[in-house]
Length: 210
Image 1 (tube, rainbow, N blue to C red):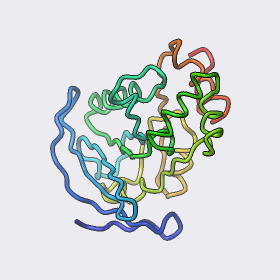
Image 2 (cartoon, rainbow, N blue to C red; image 1 turned 120 degrees about the horizontal axis):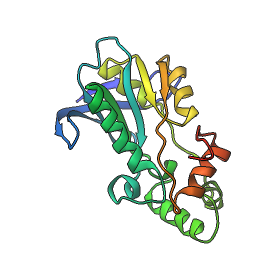
Image 3 (spheres, helix red, strand yellow; image 1 turned 90 degrees about the horizontal axis):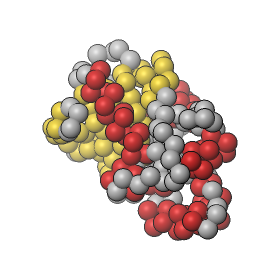
Image 4 (spheres, helix red, strand yellow; image 1 turned 90 degrees about the vertical axis):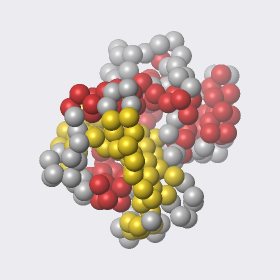
């Protein structure tokens, strides 16, 4: 395994590249790149399609793990549909990258996320639930994007996101965000309050009528 060091001003941890392999999917045949954080044992992956290291802005998505949305098709959030839409857009363009970070439940972990969901069932919104459990509203960190992008040779992106924190994080890493591309998912009775809270309390760029 090769070690890719994070910049001193972003983290003291190292991220190690493990290996790459083909990943055929419904939409395209991606290449999957595996990384590990030795300090925590957390495993992260990047999916790439096409030549992402040619210097041109890369269609990109930073996606935090959401077992309930990504794998179990939950309607409580927009995570799974956002991941699917990002893969579709990259496949249509023929070139892009998805950084898949293992930070479930906005960083609180799967078991705490279940507890937060229970509090939401009783009336709390997604931010209030995390706070009642003793967590900040959003504990996610995007520092690991820096060594992942450096390993892949990417310095400029067209970022698919509604979250201004992701844009700011990349810009702080000197990654150029040439364009912000919204990933708007239709509301349903189960995610409507969740999406409204993301907009009102977390600053996500979501129109109120979408």
